[in-house]
Structure formats: structure tokens, C-alpha cells
Amino acid sequence: MKYSIKIYANALVDLLLDKKADGQKIAKNFLKLLQKNGDLKKGSKIILQAQGLLLKKTGNKMVVIESARKIDNTNFIKSFTKKGDIVKEKINPKLIAGIKVIVDFQKQFDNSLAEKLSQIKNF
Image (cartoon, rainbow, N blue to C red):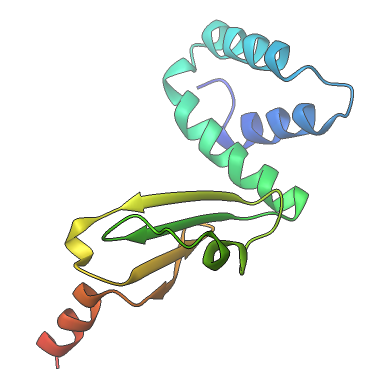
């Protein structure tokens, strides 16, 4: 690896934050750079770190809402997110019921039946 994942991610974020930047052109040239440096296999890790840095620099967050079934109440999601936040909904039948909310890749709230049963079992 010619440069660290962190250096690549910081460079990518700085380019993307430029108001005059063409995102598609940046992505294409960035992939060419990774290929030239022999670092293409680290691309997914670089993108993941860049996404986190970009969210932090713009004051936004990544919110993953995990539930046993699809959530129909969009007001629930809007109540703790704002414009610019990335919201992903994940269906996980293993939760049985309830929800789990993860903000910026850290568990924040787990009110699933699976978690409650696990707590009873470990009691």
C-alpha cells in the first residue's frame, strides 16, 4: 500500500467537499489512482472511512434502523434525523419484535424482544 487508508479517505473527502467539484469525475480519477498505486483492493475500506469523515465534517450522521418488519411510520424516523443524514432500514427477523437503532456505527438503542430475552437468559 502506497498510502494509508486514512490518507486516501481524507484526500477523497477534501475533494468531494469542494463546491465546484464533479463527483463522477473525482470517483473515476480516484479509482484510477488506486489502481495505479496497487491499492484497489483497499477501495471498500477507503470508501467506508471517507463516508464517516464526510458525515462528520458536514455535521450529519449515519442511522441504521433495524427491525423485525418494515416500519411504516416515517414520522418516527423523522423525529430523530435531519436532512443530510443517511438513514438505512434493515429487516432482521431474528429481532422477533421491537427495534434497534445504531447511530454512526455505534449501538445506541436496542429495544428488541431478542435483546430482552437475552437479558433474562443472562440474569
